[in-house]
Amino acid sequence: MGGKILSIAAHVPEKILTNEDLEKMVDTSDEWITTRTGIKERHITKDNEYTSTLATEAAKKALDRAGISPMDLDMIVVASATHDYWFPATACLVQANIGAENAACFDIEAACPGFVYTLEIARGFLSIPNYNNILVIGAETLTKITDYTDRGTCVLFGDGAGAAVITKSDEEHFLGSYLKGNGKLGDLLIMPAGGTRKRCSEESIKNREHFIKMQGREVFKHAVVGMQEAAIKALENAGISPSEVDWLVAHQANKRIIDATRKKLGLPEEKVYINIDKYGNTSSASIPIALNEMYEKGLLKEGQIIVLDAFGAGFIYGAIVIKW
Ligand code: ACO
View 1 (cartoon, protein in one colour):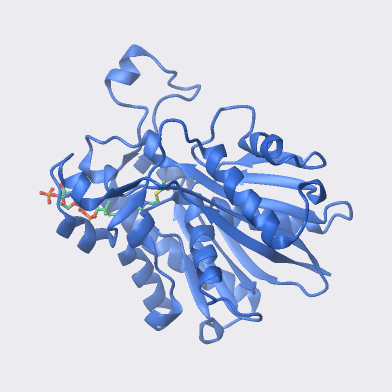
View 2 (view 1 turned 90 degrees about the horizontal axis):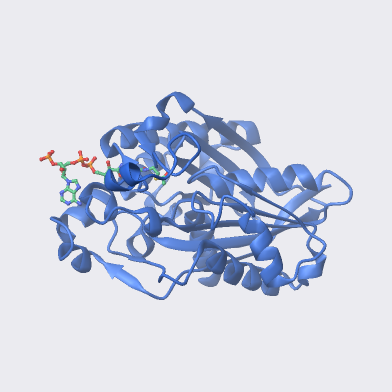
């Protein structure tokens, strides 16, 4: 007895912010952004679109593709660093929006690897008899906490959501994983204010502390090492060699980080899916958005071995090896 991904779906807001738009907002250039990150444009929410709005749309599509009703869901888990509220959980908002009245609901905050973490959580719950269908979602509105006066971060982020229905199956499709944290380096990527430690105040607003603060160069170095470690260890735990991998679907934070991971695994370029050019860094949503695109293009075939690999604020990193 095991678990598998029954369906995958995604939703991004309509509005697009291009590199050319950003050239008019801060001292940057399309050339710098493209060569340093691989990003050309990103989707951004309007004021009346929230993380739960994107998550709900992705959830509806995932249910439709799975061919099950919202009432068949036993659990909803939302991974996000940009939840609508501290509480209630975004999973509860999604539950109400889709009418999944039988579902347990909770959120996790595991930054960019959030979706990878939800898959492991779902896989764990599926071993308990009364959990059969679990909806996992990675959803973000990072542009709402992005400082559009800071060129070091504002060119990077976009909004979006991806969702998957995970269900029990005779054969185990979750082959192995590796999840890790390194909390000592949390200050390198942080939103300093708005929590209980530094509550919202006139001073915190004046200091722009309700926005993402990142020491990009330092984060980059750790991301390369962390992504490589996670992929290699997850494959070891799954008993699979890199040569057996059909796809590396990595968190889309920076094309150069993904390239370094690919090279470490010895994979050719055609085995790596890249869509950072269209979405930027959508944190926990980036892997399911990529999987959804691959599904819609017919690139995902039964039996393929796929490595999902991510690194983010915390630091938290991790990879999971799945059989499609
Ligand atoms: N346009 C033009 N110049 C810029 C810009 C910009 N948008 N941003 C920075 N620069 C300048 C810097 O000021 C610096 O100039 P200087 O040399 O005169 O001081 C120069 O470009 C180089 O800056 P670096 O920060 O060293 O540039 P780097 O090549 O490292 O690229 C980047 C920066 C893209 C942020 C990269 O470091 C990166 O991708 N870091 C990792 C991001 C990441 O993976 N985050 C984790 C997940 S995010 C999450 O968890 C929410």
